[in-house]
Length: 472
Image (cartoon, rainbow, N blue to C red):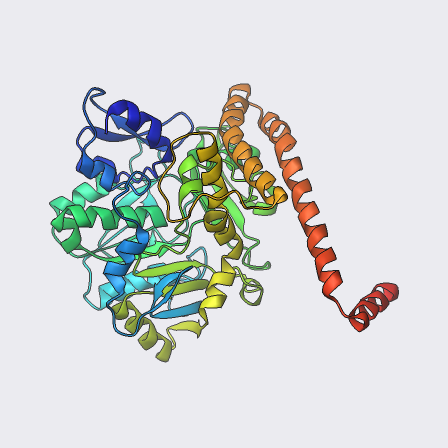
């Protein structure tokens, strides 16, 4: 691939850093919008085929389904679902043992599994995201390697923050051992592709833990929340994106921010409902690549954890995880811990797992067909995906997709202007022109849905509902 073609296509890259691992002409840099991107050292050289291969959205040679089939299809007793992929078991629950759940964003399962792999002498190291210890760096979080339970716990929380793996994967090549890694779908898939190109990675990466991820965020997401509580851009020192509020449902968490306010170091805890930009459907500060993945349930990961966004579980303020297990060894560890009451896991049907992420699946997978169609109609290059381009989407849903793109694109540009003006309200005012339209569209959908439900009701159900309203 020549440099001109690469510069055009790299906006679709997941920016995991995998390309930089295999091509010395590529390095990772943070752009003006707070997103990692690939940068060429020599603009006149070709991009290697290996680099193209390890990039999920540039690779045309294979896909997640084919890689997952090679990894799991031969396992005895494994099941398959087109939406969630291969699985031995599906659970919903949380960790009872120790403080894993208290220190986690949700049920604590990811960190606990790492501990179990250590305790059973199955790994030597964990590759995960931790607070950046380099005081000279503006990057708050980065991928790093841990070799103890204490170190692993430091990376227990969810980070809605851009990271990349090039530096840490270079360390894996230099340092023999057995590794487990955690990441979002495109990152885990890129690690699988790296393992297909380099026997060292294949040998040393023993286990992959996958996260369910709505979309990636730029550094401006955290910065914008701090801006709202008086911590100016550049003065934020630490952030907990998922601070639990024990008197509220798990979905009603807070954001805990530490930084300089009027020259003093202060910590502010703010419920997410009081922070502008927390509506995940708006897609503030989202990279283009996030709208061009069709892997919702991290199909190439040995174990998948996500939030149990289900009515029967969200009332528990401490949080619960959905869990998909594709690796038999990990499944055995979970089953053993369930018997010992170290964890509380409900064995659930695959439909429960899907239901917990139904809206995420609709946007990421189902409605990707429309986004691909738009690119084809505009005669623009776009990644080759398992979903086929198709315009067959309701008019309202098309409008929502179009508006989400506008909102995402404008959030990067308008926030930059708000920082220059030192006025966050400018950002709110300008973005509200778009988000108000978005809210109106959803009100239209909700009215339509209520009317459809009304038409399906039987006469006695309508009468009963009317009587309840009259009593109020």
